[in-house]
Length: 64
Image (cartoon, rainbow, N blue to C red; front, side):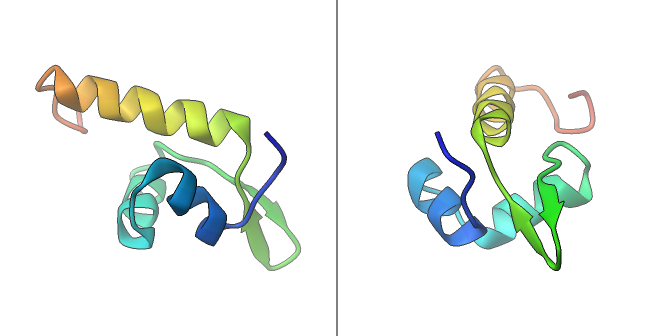
């Protein structure tokens, strides 16, 4: 997948900007900075999917 901005990223993952930013604050998602914007690529998609999988097992985000 090509690099995308947060608007496209949240559509692909069916999530919200607040959720993505929360995971960024916890340093679970680390998009690349491109000037003054963040770019999301395949790594960030995979990282988000891993977070969701851990949550489905009942793990707390602090344990991730």
